[in-house]
Image 1 (tube, rainbow, N blue to C red):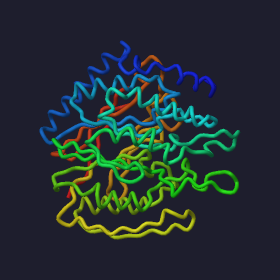
Image 2 (image 1 turned 90 degrees about the horizontal axis):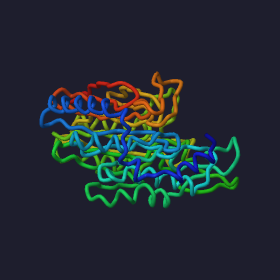
Image 3 (image 1 turned 120 degrees about the horizontal axis):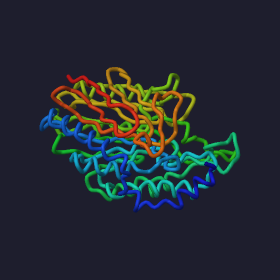
Image 4 (image 1 turned 30 degrees about the vertical axis):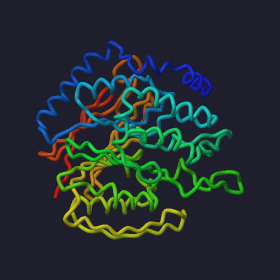
Length: 372
């Protein structure tokens, strides 16, 4: 499919129809997976709960059944939230910004029936476009104001969310004492354009956290009501799945999380000579406070992955789109249950485990997180 054909497909998308339509070949699979989730929820007891994670939707390269599938699972399993973890757009290198915005809007419309449950996280493709020819792919970007208007502002309509800087926010599953935190890993210092006509800070390629988000994360988002609460963090990139990947202030963030779960103090600062604007410092004390930290989840890599970084569990889930990565053992095929892929995580606080039930392409997974 050419870029022009993808753009036309997005323009012709019947979002109202697709938001409810589930093909017959999905029915048996859904029944089996919903039964598994119910079993895991019963085993977890009153302190257990579930949440969804769909990532790398890439709407121009997607069979677009996941919104209807997700709604059915959330409804039948009583699940309050799911993360839409970024890269909503097709990710074409050459595209007009108006078409990029159209793809974001189409994704929102597809999931509109469960918008109150959707926690949208910015991906690296969601602001990047090019009107230039190769090799200048992803050399232009939506502004902070446009990202606010089309991604972050629509979520502010829901009163169950507390917003911080750069589109970061958290939402509480109060009944189960689970806090869902989202952060923006592509928050650059400015939208400044350099003398060469290109952005000084490349939003597509710069990944990390700046001071304002770090401070808000430590001093607001992680200040849970009591130590019985558990936290899940979602960003587009689940850190460190590729060797050599630069993630500014990764170590500082891991230090904050470790202090939260160990109920101790943490103090650190960073200095990056290569990219101005990512220097940061934090001093936070969780003594007598804090809670449990289950996992840092996300996508980006188009494959399943899990790592332990400084004691912190990080999990990546395979892409929901039709892109087949050479690094993933799973193959997406249209008009089969492998055409979509997303996870329903069930937390068992008694066992300190996360059970990931895969809807569609891939396999169920199981993880253990440490508590102190």
